[in-house]
Image 1: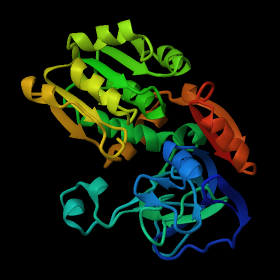
Image 2: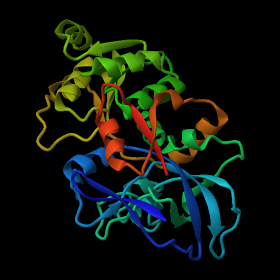
Image 3: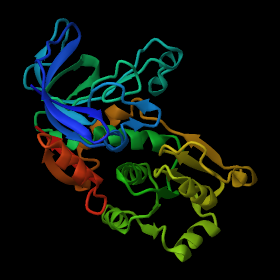
Amino acid sequence: MKVCVIHGAEDVRIEDAPRPTPEAGQILLSFAFGGICGSDIHYFQHGRVGDSVLRAPLVMGHEFSAVVLESGPVVEGFTHGDKVAVTPALPCLKCEYCQRGLTNLCTDMSFMGSAARVPHCNGGFASELVVEARQCIKLPDDADLRHVAMAEPYAVALHAVSMAGDLHGATVLITGAGVIGQMCAIAARAAGAARILMSDIAPAALERAKALGVDEVFDVADGTAMADLSSVPQCDAVFEASGAAPALNVAIAATKPRGTVVQVGFLPPQAPVDLAKLLTREITLVGTYRFIDDFAEAVRQIVSGEVDLRPMISADMSLDDPDAVFARALDKTDTLKVMVHF
């Protein structure tokens, strides 16, 4: 079988590997479609994502859908040919946070395609792979596996939106028009937001945002527009999805008294942020990390047709040429989400 393995920065290879055998409680899958995530791009560019540093070769990928090939012993409910959505999260279910239902905060988490643990937890970009049965959600026979591969990032957006409280009738700002930012806009609209604003440094990204239904966009390079956005607080909730300190400053400035800022993007260490307005406006600043039951909800919304994320897919490419895949993913002038297959 084939696997997509990263060895270091700008060193991704397609390699041959032995076909795995499912053990008790596991399922052997055939890879269908996968999405290139921002963390995949960070591994490709820098060999690390924050504190998660590549120390050994790693099979990439954590956004994917698949088809069941074979079930291991004691697995019930799955048969050969079933379509499945696969969550990359495998919490321990034993630690304090798992026991409280906060599985995204598990202290012994295994997360596919991540270098956070040593040995690393291999990802899903393999033509055939084994996962735990509890990671799989069986899909209808007519499910669009390409669309379902978007469930993982959409789950991140759903969880972020859940951290902001009731959004019915709200004015919402999203700073950062990448995939997660766009999905936060979609999730916020589904949660009842009446007016959605978005800011970014890339005009092309803002044009895509308007096409996806954002009400008003703000080019960070336009000083007048940004002053209008931040001079008078007008937002009930803001989702900071860029991971840039200046964007968090804008987010805080644009938030009404008693409003909420949800930090979605990873900020750099020692980011210069002006927090004074948190006090004077009693703003709530909350972090959000991955997802809990939001993955199942993301799958449900996608399969039911409540949301259509397919317009966000900019390209379908073969993983047989990983350098071309990452070159396209890095071209932010023309790319939002690259979908891959073998």
